[in-house]
View (cartoon, rainbow, N blue to C red):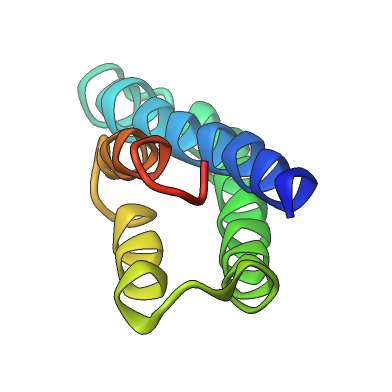
Length: 97
């Protein structure tokens, strides 16, 4: 169980960070500096990490025994900027951490 959560937190951190890079660095570079190449690469990396995060969140939900509330919060955290970091702080305060 601990290894599952450890991998969930690692994947979540990478996915959350890639979302922030995409929104706050790559997108402004694309639209303000006419440099779309960063969106291409960071967007692809983020897309792959997002899919991995969703799959691993489902696996973690089943393996750890999260309720529906935790599963929904985990998925919502992946689409809200800084959402994963907030979710991770709450997760650390529970018996799951």
